[in-house]
Image 1 (tube, rainbow, N blue to C red):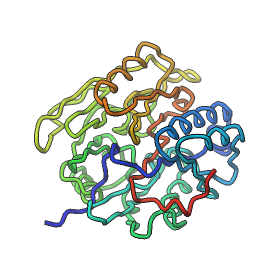
Image 2 (tube, rainbow, N blue to C red; image 1 turned 180 degrees about the horizontal axis):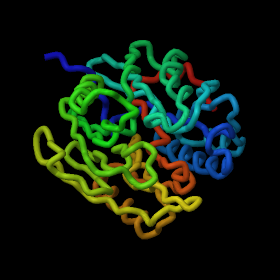
Image 3 (cartoon, rainbow, N blue to C red; image 1 turned 120 degrees about the vertical axis):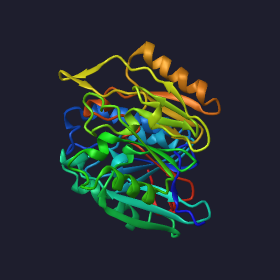
Length: 338
């Protein structure tokens, strides 16, 4: 039986990690130097393990000291310039890459509407098509237009066994899709090549604009292992071949900005080549505990923390600000080295 190309697990080998540079025209403008310092730290950490493609809108400003350090890194920083953006949360408007493992590769492009119309998203929603049309993918990678359906990259997490996680709150939010839960589930499975899609029901974290993205709460760290920072019903998770083991992550001490609690979470980590990059929040006890749990579960990878207290001021964290591109998808000859 022919199987559809599937969304690849994040821990599969990667060509690069995409990020979008914050500019003065975005909501970061009030503390631009602070968020630039955070992005520089994330990028330089990633460059120890993987190439980085930095999307630089027309008004981007990069320090020469940062560029010099990036050029001395083990891996390469590339720039994709001239694409206008509303914001930096590339996880939710970036390309979702699927493969059948036999050479067929596609980029799936859903609509991003600012998490149910909360924020302007017209420029972000155009990003994946513009990035594809610029020729940054290899010639054998096809573009699949799924923009009649609203869905975000942070709303899905997958294993290598065509099994996925999403949340009920995202699928039932009224300003995304009109279809019922069953039809939405079937559409996601068809587009992303999933045989199982587990729908979890925990409430969104306080301060979460996404209405409960799974990457803020519960993640695969292997085909049969989950980590979670919330209580989930084991009955809502059905492994294809065996029991799934659920491991609890700590919750950081509250991160308060301008009187509001922010959705700080250790579940918003990023797998990349040979490493897991984990957001930390200046909480020495819980930061250390979260890193220890992930190190014990993934002994073949380095587990590295990056302070994301400034990043979470805008209600996202490290995973939200990054999008991995699997191996043999990108044509790096078309990209400019920074």
